[in-house]
Length: 321
Image (cartoon, rainbow, N blue to C red; front, side):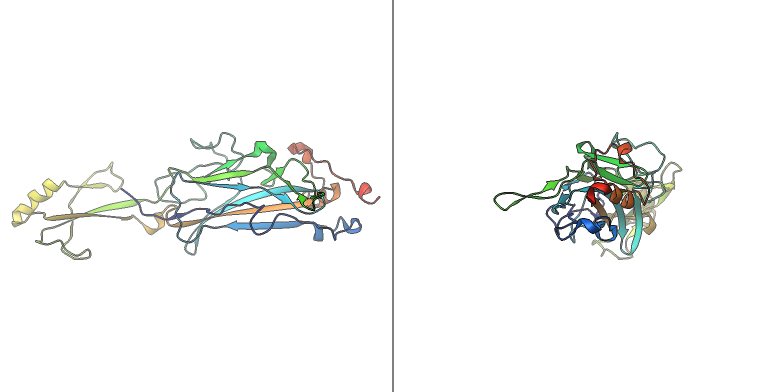
């Protein structure tokens, strides 16, 4: 049975270095005198990625796109990135995952062995019940993360931190710029092969007319059923042979048959005919201890060493010299 459901993919995943500008937050007009003015120097960029109209994303299909951040400014920065994903059908926001909210359950078979959070973990409470359930599911989208290339996940705030300071751009002798870029954090996404595309019911009809009736004609009659407690619907249709035996009493026989497959309930559509949006939020701050503590630490000390970050930060006293 083929389900003609439309699941829309993230068809234009982030390629930060080449789409709509870059993650660059400082420029040459900034001075050391107001270097700790985080209102000016702390910048957050959020990009939303939705599919092109009409594109379909099928179960098991991958989209190969990269996530990197470049620093085209002149000052060194540190970088963190956060992902959020959302499923929407029409005006109904039916599923949302916040990476800062971890759920205590074992990873489903096929999930990444090093999944750090709900965003990375692929898990469905029931892949056949037709329910896209944020309480029972984590994500139904595999992400090929590449944290070993220099990224570390912080479960306390849901961010991925780049482990090294990203230096500012350097102008070369030929006038071009040498621009620092992070390693890839996300390589591709793929919809789970067993993603719940809804709970469907097949209805069987027959006709005894000389010509095939129109689709909505009342000449189509539903097959008789027999109780079956083990069937998902609680019944099975009787066989064509048995149906014909019953019709003989009226002097008729089956001349045409058809099957119609529809959702059992509009609320049981799973992830079919839904739009998937991946939101990528990247935040950078100048590589100074006070700026990092103010922005990433909320005013307190941000212990980046505990995360494993190898940041060589400039102290306030060095900046003021």
